[in-house]
Amino acid sequence: MKISRFFIPTLREVPGDAVIASHRLMFRAGMLRKLANGLFAYLPLGLRSFRKVEQIVREEMDAIGALEIKPTVVVPGEIWKESGRWESMGEGMLRVKNRLGNDFVVSPTAEEAFTSLMRDELSSYRQLPLSLYQINTKFRDEIRPRYGVMRGREFVMKDAYSFHTGDASLDETYEAMGRAYRRIFKRCGLTVIPVRADSGAMGGSGSEEFMVESVIGDNTLLLCKACDYAANVEKASCKRDYSAPASLEAVKAAAASLPALEKIDTPAVRTIEELCAFLKTGAKQFIKTLIYKAVNVELDLSSAPGCSKLERRRPAPDTPEVYPEAFFAVAIRGDLDVNEVKLAAALKAAEVCLAADADVVRLTGAPVGFAGPVGLTSLPLVADETVTALNDAAQGAVTGALEKDRHYRHVAYGRDFSPWLVTDVRTVVAGDFCPVCGGELYEKKGNELGHIFKLGYKYTKSMKVSYLDENGKSQIPTMGCYGIGIDRVLASVIEEHHDDNGIVWPMTAAPFQVIIVPIKYEGAVKAASDGLAADLEKRGVEVLLDDRNERPGVKFNDADLIGIPYRVVVGDKNLAGDSPKIELKYRRDKENRLVDPRRAAEELAALVFGEIEKLNN
Ligand code: ATP
Ligand code: MG
Image (cartoon, rainbow, N blue to C red; front, side, top):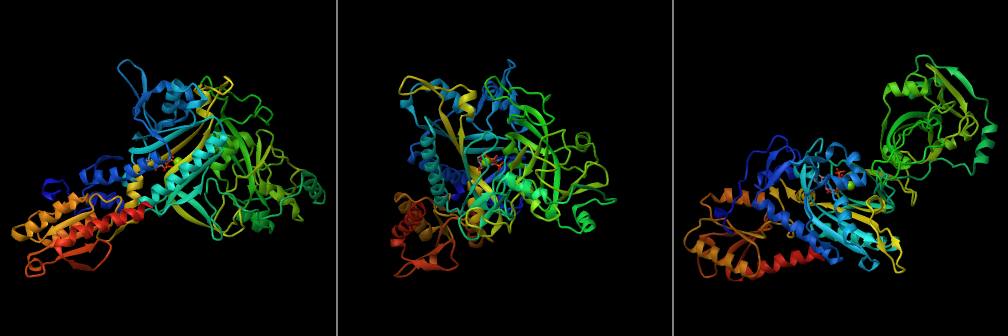
C-alpha cells in the first residue's frame, strides 16, 4: 500500500481532552477522529488494527466451538420489558420510538436478544450445550465518556451467550471461555490480571473479570503478595483480623460478663475520632451505623422489622417479586467502610446508596450521626461480621444512642441488639490479609477489558425458555455470558506498547507489518522499494510504502508515530556499489542494521511470521 493512496492524517497537535497515551496516539497517528462526545470514527489505519483484534477474538471463540451470528443492534423494547430490564437499565440505555410509536432499544448488551432467539429455536436437550456470539455495535449513554474509545458511547463488543442443561455443562463452557480469554489477551500482547468479580444481584454463581493495570482504571483490585489471589474490591474478602465467636451461645456468654449498657452524654462530639478521644477508646471498639436505601430488593423482607407494609411488585410478569424501595441500617466496626456492591449482593438489590438526611432522621428519630443498633426497630439491621466479635473486649462496644449528643457504651451483641442479617459487607483495603493464604494484600488500579459470568436462570426463566429433556420433560436451560470490548482492548494494546515517539505495535495488532521508506522515491531507489514491497506482499506481509515527497526526517517520525514494527530505509548511497544494502530497523530497537536487498524480503517475512507465531502460541 502506498501512503499517497492511503489516508493517514497524522497530527502534531493533540486534542485537549486526550489525557492518556492511547487517546493521544490514536488521534495523532490518524487512526481515529471524534464526531461527538463518546462517538468516534475509525479511519483506515485504525480500522486495520481494530479488525486484527476482532479477528483474534473471533478465532479464539471459534476454537472453543462458539458460533458467530449477526443479530440486529436495534431490538424491540418488548423483550426488555419481559426480562424486567426495561425498568432497571436506567438512562444508560438508549430507547427510541418508531413512527408507529413502538418502543425500541439500541442494544447496550444482548442477553434479551439471544435469549429470545433461543426461546424460538430450542426444543430438545440434544441442541445443548450451545454457545453463540456476535461482534457487534453497542450503545451506552455513559454519563462521562472519556479516555477516547476506552469509554465511548458507541463501541463494539464481542458478546457470547451459552445455554446448558445443567451446572456441570455451564462450568465447562465457563472454564473454556476463561482459557480463550487468556489466549486472546496473550495474542494481543496484553498483560492482564484475571480477578474474581461480583456476580451481581441476580445470584450468578461465578464471575471473572480481566483487568489491565492502569492509573486511570475505574476498578480497585486487591492482590495477594504471597499467592495468586486477586479480586475486584467489589468482591474481595479478607482473613478475619479478629477471633470470630464460636457460636451465638459463646457471644451471649461473653455479653453476660460485660458491664451493663450505659447511655452517656457526648456533647459537641461529631466524628469517630473525636468520640474515641472523648471516651479514650479506639475506632475498633466503635459500631458505626449507616442507613442505606436499596432499590429493587429481591430478598424476602416479610419478617424484617419495619417492612410489613412495604410495597412489593414484579418488574415484569415472570420475574421475581421485588421491593422497589427498602431502607436498611448497616452496622460495621468503626475503623472499616461498607462496600456497597457487597451490600447490594447480600440484599439481592439492584442498587444501594446512602439514605438522604431526611430519611435518616425519619427512620432513626435522631439527627444524622447518632444512629446505632440498640433499640432500632424501624428498619432491618444488617451487621457486618466484625460487629459480632466486639463482645470480647472488656468494655464492649460504643455506638450512637438514637439521640442527639448521646452514645451508648458497654454495648453487647446478642444482649443489647440482634441483627436481622449478619454478613460480610466490609471493604477490603491494602494491608488486610488474604482470605486464601493469609498473605498481605496490596492494591492496584485496573481497567476491565473482559468479563465472564455464570448467569444461571435469570433470563431463561423470565423469558420462558424451555426444552424437553431425555424423558420428554420440560426443563429450563441455564446460561452464561461473556463480553470483551474490542475498542478497549485495542486502546489497551497502545497503552502497553508505546514510547515517546509513538505506538510500538505488537506484530499481531499492527496495521501494517513493514514500512518501506525510500529516501527519495525515484530512480534506483524507487525500483528497489517497489521490488521489495511486491516481494513482501507476495509472501503475505502487509507493507506500507512511504512514496511521499517529504524530507526523510518527516517520514521517519511518521513511521515511529504509527508504530509499524519493521522499518526499511532505502537510499541511493547504500544501494550503490557491488554489495548494495538497505537499512532495517525494528521499532523497539534504537539500532538499525544493513541487509542485502536481495535477501531482505525473505528475512523480513521470517521475522514477521516468527513474531506472530510467538505471540499466538
Ligand atoms: P464498565 O464497568 O467499564 O462500565 P461494564 O462492566 O459495564 O464495564 P460489561 O457490561 O461487562 O461492561 O461489558 C463487557 C465489556 O465491554 C467490558 O469489559 C469492556 O471491555 C467493554 N465496555 C463496556 N462499556 C464500554 C464503553 N463505554 N466503551 C468501551 N468499551 C466498553
Ligand atoms: Mg463488567
